[in-house]
Length: 296
Image (cartoon, rainbow, N blue to C red; front, side, top):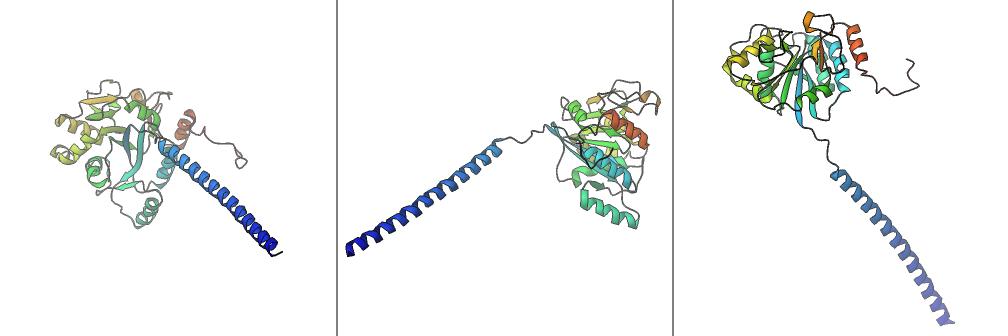
């Protein structure tokens, strides 16, 4: 009887041991499977290359501190655009603030969007603002770019076509835009229109270090840039992207023409109806998803 009880106790203990061993093995298999799965996923993520960007571009939109509505609108316009070819940053550029309300309201913009550059200058159009913009960048930026663009706040730039047009061009000693006079197709004739022109980073650095731009800052800013480059024997690589860059139809004589699918930039958008026509023509809102929230 005693042996029988001991046998039953031993059998029960063995059964419990096997029972716990079984669940211990299952638990380890589950944990290892989970870790392996996560490891595989991690490897897949690591092995998936980040989207390759061939070059970088800073677009500085020269505007005025009080143009709050225009900045907010342009944030929408450029915030929904991108290019697989280029890393593109868009910043708003103006001179020192002069009003108490500007210091409060623009501080809010900086906190929220971090897309403003305030230059150490007095607000102006043709008295050195463009020089201050280019010459300050190598000193104030935490990184360099392949290209730097100056643009007006009444121009619509299509970022993907812009990047595509820049892809085959040199990364050094480049001057890109819409050559003046309007009828010319020769980028070496004169200068690029101030609506939106682009310089390679080496030229931006030269502007910051050379006495030529520093001593020639008063006058039409786009014409001055052309003068600097001519005097400094710079920008041997030039590209005038006509007819893809132009003024809005009917606004500026031969610098204007009808909207075309190949457009890179449209200038002189002074009114909301002009902006609306341009955005509609290029079907900018085509990605809008259907929702019961919208009764359009």
